[in-house]
Image (tube, rainbow over all chains, first blue to last red; front, side):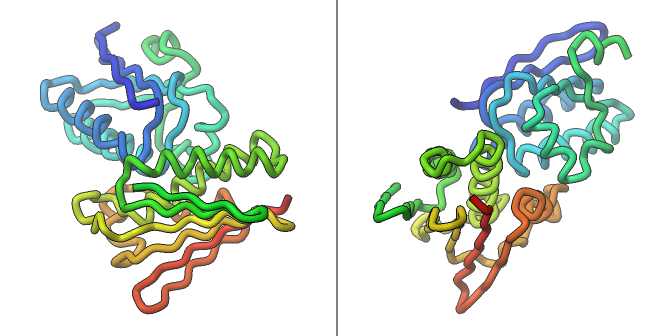
Length: 111
Length: 131
């Protein structure tokens, strides 16, 4: 499955719902999406990974790059993820402490 | 281009350095792991590690990749699940500093036995898991 990206606004945040596989081939599409949104003035992003079937370090790198980008504009980038297979990757790389990871979109937007 | 050969217990796949083909290798690795009766969690680890190793070989900037160079992935299931990824790369960790994530940390977290040897410009990365 290729990468799918859907964006919408809610409670002053921009939610990006990601589906499919984020790997060395598809990660540039996610990077372009995040970069484009930040350049358009979207500073507070929530990236929902619940429909992601696979993610490698290239995908993690895009998320880290996005976090750096929004922080330079005093914004935020938070994640929605409950899948153990993805949470394990965050733990192994130490990125579980870098990102705010929520259990649902409603939990993320309530912050 | 992707070619695959299978002998007794071993599967070898050769791909060009096209990021789009890494998914194909992951699928084959998962299928071989499933045939070797690995648990679901181990299959997932192997799938991720094999994709990660291929991504390391291709590099973070695909425009730098020499498309004519092949990456060979050998999957062996004799006694243990052993993955050997071989390719000609210009320093397997070059360029990743800008990405913000160390792929080696992920590989070493996925397998207790990760080894990299570079000989005459050819890098050979091996990983194994007990069966």
